[in-house]
Image (cartoon, rainbow, N blue to C red; front, side, top):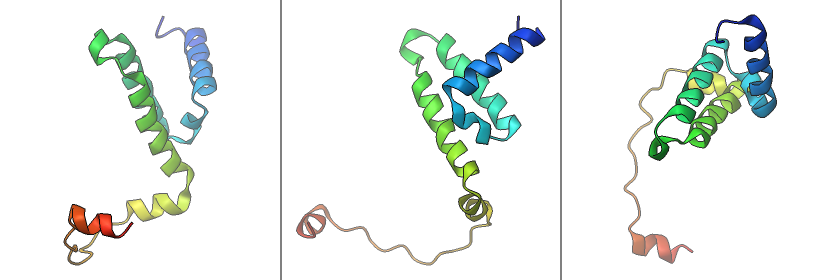
Length: 96
């Protein structure tokens, strides 16, 4: 079934209908999504979480759909300087 061109086309059409954002993924990532999604559906009941897989890949597709964001995220990161100390729970509560 997996190597039948007619079946492959049908599966691709179904995925693009159910997850239209897959169009924004590079081909290799789209293939990885399909494999991970299928594995999530086939896993043991407690481990099945296809929605989590789909959500993670959808966020990846959103980055690929935004050329400006994709460019920013592909840049080499340098040292952005010191990170300020987080506020305590009490101090954060006073800011509200």
